[in-house]
Image 1 (tube, helix red, strand yellow):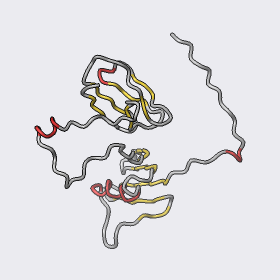
Image 2 (tube, rainbow, N blue to C red; image 1 turned 180 degrees about the vertical axis):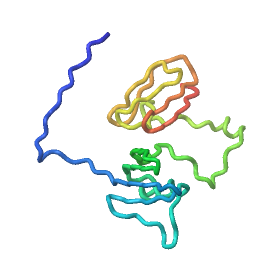
Image 3 (cartoon, rainbow, N blue to C red; image 1 turned 90 degrees about the vertical axis):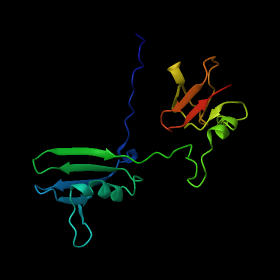
Image 4 (cartoon, one colour; image 1 turned 135 degrees about the vertical axis):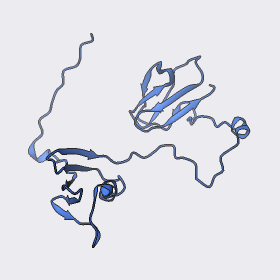
Length: 178
């Protein structure tokens, strides 16, 4: 077994410490299933004349996270005394956006004739990964880390096709030929 490095911690002065602050959402569910919501200890009320129920849970969180652009801590207290805590994380932006909906999908013959080349730079390295992210190669022959520019140089291999996946960015490349 390899020897692991010793972890070293640096003590910060109090003036250097930056507190981590998340919006804190508390949802209390009463015995009838009605929700009471507070955000940072301030009441968050439903529209006038309405009452929130369990079915509104996702819509409330979507609204409070601004459609998952702001992370929040959520505490849910049930009427039976149970308690649940979670952090709702933001969505990660996709590096390779889907085609526009008004763009017609190519037929099978067109797709075979016009198979796009994988995204590469001038030296043939695959691009579209986040700097430092772990990139998985099909048949998991090995995984490599993207460099400071978010690119990798795949190893020479005779196994084709090769599937390349960025674990963090979600970048997916299928390389048919080299």
